[in-house]
Image (cartoon, rainbow, N blue to C red; front, side, top):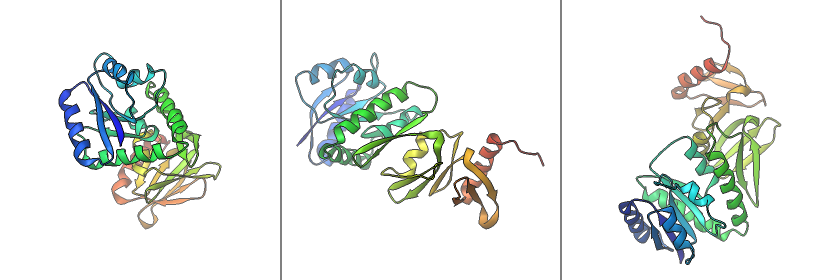
Length: 258
């Protein structure tokens, strides 16, 4: 049975999350609850946890400051917050998981499944340490990250965001097309990347494609709309995304007025 510590400054949130875990998350039990970072530190000084469900916006010391204050972190982290801001989207790519309040049972169960997989993976500890470190560095910057940490089988690839030409959905995976023609297959959905990437540089043009505006060579109105990328790929634009795409291209390009 895996052991969980819940950290949130509001007792109602702690009790609600404990109830959901008890009734809907098999193989996980709540062994500790804390209403502040200081209280959580004291608890961890004499107890062990496999996973910490950590609120971010807490008075006095937030979740990120709490993690930075720990000499060692022998547990997985699932962030929980009520604020859906740009910087927090990085958490989905860099931590075990990120859940937005109010908590959905499906999202909670999915997060618990990810924790179990991470604990069962012999290289997960080092991966999570590096990914969390990358997150904590990224989260303190106002600008979008220049690199993205991408977990792959037995390793982590740190790639330049500017080198991404396009992203292609493939079921629950994403194929990343790089400017050097290299391809990366990542076990994240396109939706995860959509929230992470700079919306001024990238555009979701279809349910299956996100493109980097700087690598678009041509836009064709044939068959409803097609973009031709610098690496030779051609992607369709859905009708619902067309106006948004054209508006972004106007901002990103010098264009003649009609």
